[in-house]
Length: 107
Image 1 (cartoon, rainbow, N blue to C red):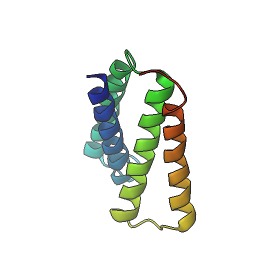
Image 2 (cartoon, one colour):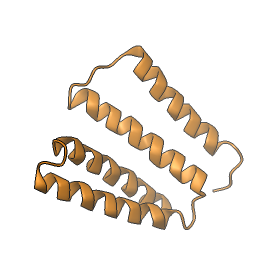
Image 3 (cartoon, rainbow, N blue to C red):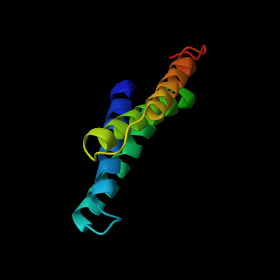
């Protein structure tokens, strides 16, 4: 069940970050509320997931997955620029998470 909480934390973190972008510098109250609510619930689920998942593994997965999803949202939804360097850099992040997971930490 702790993995479900981690996945929910990632989803809510990406929703919160998307709302933050859409809030136009926290000038749109409903999106500000959505941002804060998403992050509060996200951190609650993340904290619950840490009861069983080692923090190094959980944070690596949470951070990297969030970065990749938000970067994809930036490119496809918000029409941000994309380059080979950006894609390769994101791949390095994913490889780093795989390395943390394969480092002998027991699940």
